[in-house]
Amino acid sequence: MKARCLLEQRCTPVELAALKKFNPAAENRRETGKQPPDRFPSNEDSIGIELVGKALPHGDSVPPEKKIYDVVTQQQNESLKWLVLELRMTLKVPLTEVFRHPDVSRKNPSEARTAVW
Image (cartoon, rainbow, N blue to C red):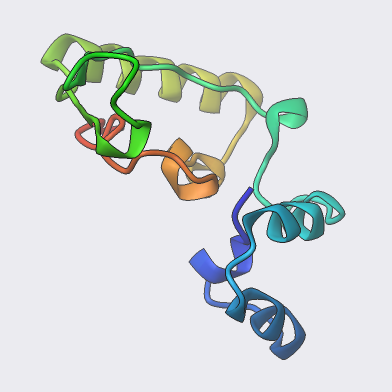
């Protein structure tokens, strides 16, 4: 899990000092110890929406960071918009609490990069 304070530009000096040394495992431990909204939602307290697209080039020998994912289709974007709106209205979730997976964790930035909600 990435540090939410970085995205929102509200890290304390202590947090910034800890984040200067790139250590994803340590960052995840620190963030997991926080409570929302001081951290991003985790698998235990969030709803994940998966948009499936083909990873290019294919093959198990290609590392994930070298793969580029297909663009999100118009039909997927329409379904995503509908689903996010329904979830937000039903669960009363503000848009400020809706995140792309690559924003909250270390994933390939091309995953669902063309998703629109």
